[in-house]
Amino acid sequence: MNRVARRFRSLPIRSRLAMLVAAAVAFAVAAVSVTCWFIVQGKLYGELNNDLQSSFHGMSADEFTQLTKTCLQEPSSSQFGGGRLRGYAQIISADGKVCLLPGSTAQVKVTGGDKAVAKTPDPNSDTFRNGTDSKGNAVRVMTTALLIKDGPVTQGVVADYAIVVAVPLEGTQSTLNELALILLLVSGIGVLGAGAAGLMVARAGLRPVDKLTEAVEHVARTEDLSIRIPVEEDSDDEIARLSRSFNSMTSSLANSHELQQQLIADAGHELRTPLTSLRTNIELLTRSEETGRPIPEADRKALLASVKAQMTELGALIGDLQELSRSEGQRGERLQVVALEDTVESALRRARLRGPELTITADLQPWYVRAEPAALERAVVNILDNAVKFSPEGGTVEVQLTEGVLTVRDHGPGIPAEELPHVFDRFWRSPSARALPGSGLGLSIVARTVQQAGGEVSLGHARGGGTVATVRLPGAPTPPPA
Image (cartoon, rainbow, N blue to C red; front, side):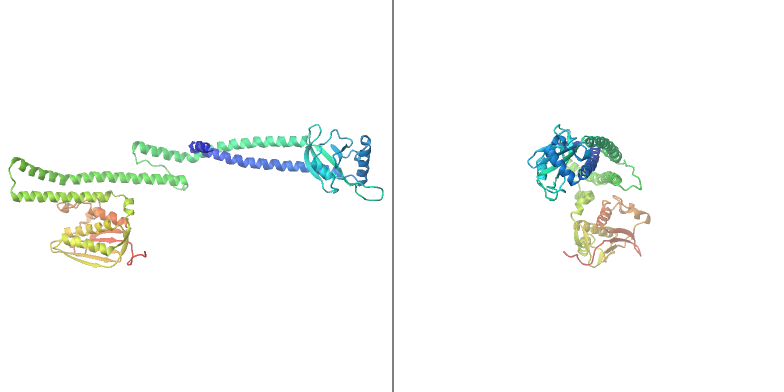
C-alpha cells in the first residue's frame, strides 16, 4: 500500500489530477449503475410476485380443498384451476413430500423455509425467493400455506401443507444481464471520458504553473530577474495570485540585487579614499624608517593623527555598511518597547561630548515606541551629529520631543532646496560637506530605522535659518501593559 502511494505521489501532478477525476467519476457512475440495477431488479421481481399472487389467490377455497385431496389421492388425474396458473406448481407437506400439479414439467427444489410455511396455517404468509428446479433452471418461487375444509359443514383447518408456485426467471435474468452490460459499457465510456476530460482540464489549469516553472528555471539558469509572468487584471484565482506573488518576488529581488550592486560600487568608491590616504601615510613612515631619515616630530605627529583619523573613518564606514546589510528579519527579531525620551537623552550625552562648544537644549516628554533600541539610538545620534557638524561655533541646537514627534533644529547654513530630495540617499554628500568627516550613510540609516519602526523622517529649512529634522514615530505616552 505504501509502495502504491509512493508511486502515485511520484507521478506528474496532471496525471494525478486525471486519475483522481477518473476515480471520482468511476465511483459515482458505479454507485448510480448499481443502484439503478437493483431498482430495476426489484421492479421486475415485484411484477413476478404480483403475477404469482394473482394467479394463486384467484382460486376459491373449495377449489384448493378439492385440488389438494385429489392431488394427494390421484396425482396423475388431478386438475389445477382450469390452467389459470402458468409455470410450476406443487403441493408440499411439512415432512417434505411433493405432489406436482398438472402442467408442471419439473419439480421446484424444496427448502427448509418451504417446510416451515407448511407448518404455519396462515394464508397471508406468502414468501418469495429465487430457486431452481430439478433441471437446474432459475425460477421465482412463492410459497403459501394451504387452508383445507374438513367436511361439508365444519370450517376446520388441515395444516401441514403448502403450495409452491414458481415461474421461470430466464427472461428476467436476461433483461437484467442486458441492463448490466449496458450500464457497464456506459460506465466504462464515462470513466474514460472523465479521465480524458480530467487530463485536459489539468493541462489547461496547470498551464500557468508550467509558465511559472519555466520562469523559475530561467531565473535559476540565467539569474535574469527581469522576467515577468503575464496575469489578467480581472483574474483573482489561486494561479493568478501565485503569478502576482512571483512577479512581486522577482521585482523585489531585482531591486535588492540592484541596490546590492550599487552598495558594493559605492562602498568601493568610498573606501578607496581613506585607504589611499592610509597607504600614503604608512609608506612615508616606512620609508623614513628604512632610509634612516627621521621625519620631523611635528610632521610625524601629523601623519600619525591622519592615520588615526582615517582608521576611525574606516571603522565608522564599515559599521554603517554592516548596519545597512542587515536583513529585515534580523531587525524584526530584536524589536521591543523603547522609551524614546531615554534614547534621546543617551544620544544627547554623546552629542554634547562631540560639540562641547555648542549649546544643546532639550525639551522631552515621555513617549514609548516599538523599535530596536540600538538602531533607534544610532539613528538619533546620526541626526544630532549632523546638527553638531553644521552648527557654527558657539551655536545652539534645539531638541524637542512632543507626542511622538522629535525635532532637531540647528542654526547652520541650511541645505539648498535642490539637494533636499537626495539627503537620504546612500553615500550622498552635499558638495559643501565633502571636506567634512563622514561616510554619507548616516541619514540613510536614519531613514531605514525610522521606516522599520513605522514612522517618517524629513529634513527641511528652519525659520530664521538652519535646518530642522523631524521624526514621527507611532507609540503612546505610557508603556503598554506587560
